[in-house]
Image (cartoon, rainbow, N blue to C red; front, top):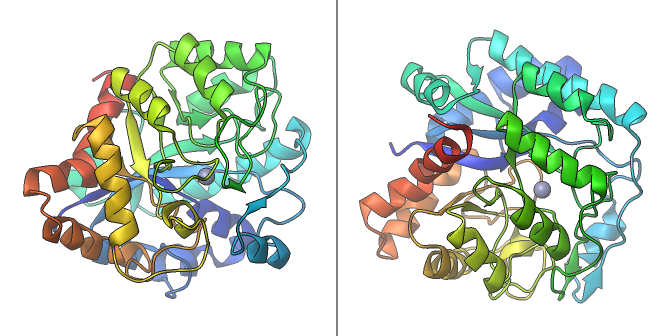
Length: 350
Ligand code: ZN
């Protein structure tokens, strides 16, 4: 089976919400949500980025917002900034869950590509500790060093919400991503410090000016872990052709987001059957980025996904669809996992 290395999942959020049930949610699995260990094994899921994400007090799975996202045009307001004092304990709890997963012997928290290869060879899930929004880090950046020591190797300065570092892009359709100001002075220092520590910087959820600030300041490959093509789905969360060209020039990477709301040309959230929207995005992404700079970034356990994928066990069906679309085996392997390992090598070093 072709292994999958995935750019983004929100499984830790499920453990945060039901900590007492984590053995059932991860080890046993109960077929709910998108991810558990048995379904990872069934689908060849070898590893990927596990997000530490601080939920906003007003739940994003608010039914009113859900309904709004199925009726374009829409523009969701950006949630309020979450202070470091309330974010830090939540982030710690989520890291604690990831470390519990490691202690079960089923997963390794990887700090290098060698670690990822070793975990894959041993049949353990290869996890990259990722922070989606840097709310748990103060402007003095001391906590960044603590988190790095704890295994953090990837960070997005913002989710779709402001932080002391920058301004996230709102969920808005149709809209271009030029929705507000770029990085703050603290955000610029955060980028430089991530470069120094070799923490990958994630551009998904940045608005266009923040994206351009990072492109100008960062010396690392430019990576959007879970974003799609704006030319196919004109959501503010997707990347314009100009942004894709900048990522290509910087030998970076884009992970295909399975969220229906970023895949469907009409911007609706409802699930769809078949592969057409995914193939259109991948063809477009590859057309600009080339075959070495595109991968997968499922957003499992954080989004509504196409019904033919369903959950993490459905990834092999996606790969079959890519083969049926005419992608050769070499390209399928690159998209499935090899391109992620290569960009991490370019970012972290060997
Ligand atoms: Zn996200």
